[in-house]
Structures are given as C-alpha cells and as structure tokens.
Image (cartoon, rainbow, N blue to C red; front, side):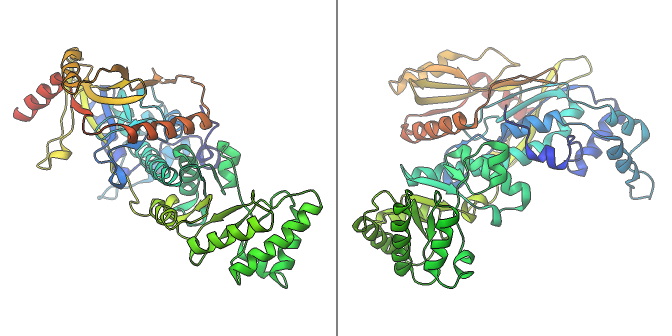
Length: 477
C-alpha cells in the first residue's frame, strides 16, 4: 500500500486510544461477560451520498489499513486507562480487562471497496469480521478516516468535473480542520481528481504533486510590485507564476509581462499569473488578451478566491479564460456539507454454539433500518458502463443471479457481474497489494465519469431477494 501515513509517524504507531470512551466501556463489559472472542460482522457504510449525489468516491482505505495494524495498547496507554474513575471514584476498568488490552492485536478479516471506486448508499465500504471486542474498538477510528476521506474525494471529483480539462490545485491547508485534517484533505483531494496540492507534507508522504508560487506579502515586502516580481524571478526563474492583484490587477499583469520578457532574455519562460480577487471572469479575459498580445500564449491564467464547483461553472458560463483553478477552503472543509454520515453497524454475531445470528437495527426512520448478515456487493457492467448494484448476504442462501438478470432484461440490458469488495485482512494479516496513488486517482476520475454517463433511469439497485426476505423476517420477529 502507500507509505506509512504521517499520523502513525507523527503521533504514535498504536491507535488503541484513538476511540470514544464508550467503545472501551462496551469492550470492558464484553470482556466481563466472556463475549469478547465471539465472532462478529460489522459494516461501515453511509446512508445518503453527499452533495446531492447518488454516489461517492470511496477513499481512505490505506489510512484505515494503518489504523487496523495499529490496534494495540502500550503499557502507558493501559496505565492511563487504569487511572480513569467511575462515578463512585473507583477505577473504571478492572485489572483483568486492562491486562487483556495490553495483549490485544487484530486477528480478524476485513473486506473493502477499493479506493477510487464508486460507492452507493448502504453498500459496505468496509466489512469487518473479527472477535467482537476487536471489531468494536475499531469503529471510531475507521469512521474517522473513511468518512472524511470519502467526503473530500467526492467533493474533489465534483470540482474536477466542473473544471473539465483545466487543472485543479488544492490549497486548503491553512483553513483545514487541524493538522491531520489538512493532510488527509490534501491526500483525498488528489485521489478524487485534483492535479496537485500546496501541502508539502502531503507531497512528501503521499507523493501528491506540489504546486505553489508567492503570496501578497511577497509583493508588499518590496518597494513596489515590479521590483517584487523581478526579485522573485531572479531567485526562482523556473517557477514564475505572479500573483497580480495586490494593488491593481491590470497593472499587475503588465508588470508580470515585463518580467516575463526579462525571463525570456535569460532563457526562461513566464509560467502564468494568478488572480485572487475582483471580477474573475472579466479580469481573466483581459489578462488572457494582454498575455497573448505580448507573446505569451502559453502562460496560463489561474484563479483562486473562495472557489468551488458552483463558482467554476458560473465563471465558465461567463466566458472566463482561467485554466488553472486554486481551490482552498471550500474543498478542504467540504464547505457545503462538512461531514459524511457514515455509520458502523453490527450485522451478525456468533452465538455460544458458534452459529451465526443475523442482527438488524430497527427504526421508525426507514433509512436507518440496517441490513443483516455478512454483506457483499455485486456490481453489474456492460463494458465500462455500470448497469446495476445488488447487496446480498454471504451467510444465507446463495444469491439468485436470475432475479437480477430478469431485472436487467426488463430494461433490455445485459451485464457482467463483478464482486466489489476485496479482501484486505485475513487472520489479522494485511494482504499485500501494490498501491499507486496516481493510478488510484486515474481510476477515480474514470469511475466518476462513467457513473455520470450512466443512465440512472435504467440503473437497478437494491437488495437480493434472499436478503430482502431475511430482513423482512427479522423486522416481523
């Protein structure tokens, strides 16, 4: 997989305490009742796709793998937990449980939708099958990395789709939700389709291409704008993208052109300019014309200033000549929907005899009723075109391909079935798979394109008949 995530390098190699207290109190109670080793199945999924979409880009799996590898408690961790008090002032956790935690490692199985794939509501992004206490203790940390990564990757996919062939650079670190929030946002934005990031940390650890130029402070630190551009060109002649709106944008473009001519005389080229305020459509049109007339047709016009997919669409409609888009706050924070409502639900557990018992969460809110069993996802394609997706229970009857085939035939479609979940852990050991973040990004871009090119009026989505009958029986019981 990818290089070890910085969260492991910077914080600690074990993540046992990266959890909510109630996970540990439940774990202590499982241990007290002797239930800790019972095999259980949990699914991590979202009920509703973000941003009004019908689907999301699955992301964060390499981070989740490192979290699972680090499910452990150091001696210091256990000592800290031993100092926690209950309501009566006595130790919250008993010594046998604390001793158990100090020996704990993950020994279960995990299957997952590959990073960069399309994920639909209620389909497991992760399926965890493990001793109950292990699966329970992973809930909070897995939701943390998968929810946010998937959210940002999906936002990035929408922004890149709006930009089309233009380049999109993420630079939201300064407005992101904390240090690791910024790091995960940069990684996820690249997975979702961005072309690079300003975040050097993400470049170093995740191999995300880094891009950047200078800020207004560089111009303001000099006697005048022309001097600032000349000084920058002397220091970094191979990276000259001038921010032109510190004082007067059009005059800034003129100064950029003057320095561009000086660069050319020294064997270098002006790479582009950046607009960060004002009427971006009008200014980009004027700047493009000025650059072309001055003999710099290859110098690009980039823009920033609170942009997102909606702003990009508006500016393109207005005829803007921008070809590089700098997206900060509204991407790194998923400004219009700051959280993905992913959940982690128990779906099956073995009883004392070792027999599997399906479990279901009831709710008067229909969308919150969970699906029982050990779920898998069968996705149907005609070539690259998605036709259908079906959830089924691997613990129950063999799923009936005939029923799905009949559904497809009603729409005059014929597809090839693909099992979407792939094995990630077996018996506690991570399955070594080659991983390349650039290939993952390319796959995500192509999957997003295919998904939005599909005919949703004929797309078939739902539960296999066997799973539907099992669910109805549990609800009636």
